[in-house]
Image 1 (cartoon, rainbow, N blue to C red):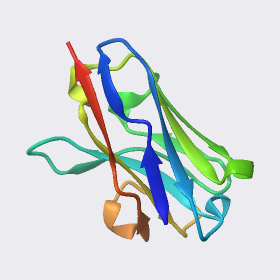
Image 2 (cartoon, rainbow, N blue to C red; image 1 turned 30 degrees about the vertical axis):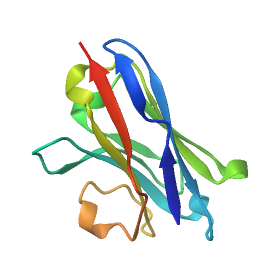
Image 3 (cartoon, helix red, strand yellow; image 1 turned 120 degrees about the vertical axis):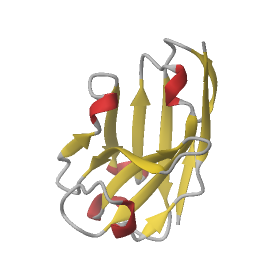
Image 4 (cartoon, rainbow, N blue to C red; image 1 turned 60 degrees about the vertical axis):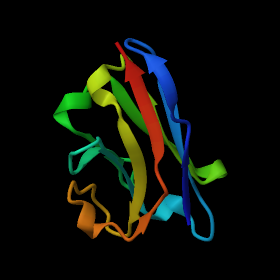
Amino acid sequence: QLQASGGGLVQAGDSLRLSCAASGFTLSSYTTGWFRQAPGRGREFVAGISWRSSSHYADFVKGRFIISRDNAKNTVYLQMNSLKPEDTAVYYCAADQSGVVRERSTVYDYWGQGTLVTVSS
């Protein structure tokens, strides 16, 4: 089971850190991805980190978001800086048993429930 948390209402330019905590399995053995879905839009890839700790980002978050893991806490984080109103969405974390980060959401085996991020202008 995955539990995403950390969302909230912030102003443009602010930062938030999202957490994805796993229970029942060891998250460090999986590739973990963050996705988001804005109202009226499809789910899109944001960032991912493989079990080898190799990371990959969508172009629209490069230089602003950082993905990391804390194996002792069985948790993956998404540090979001310089937030923009267009970052407003429900953010989901997902886990995949492959060894590489993939952007296609359908390959992920486990999903968290989502956490809402709202960025006001």
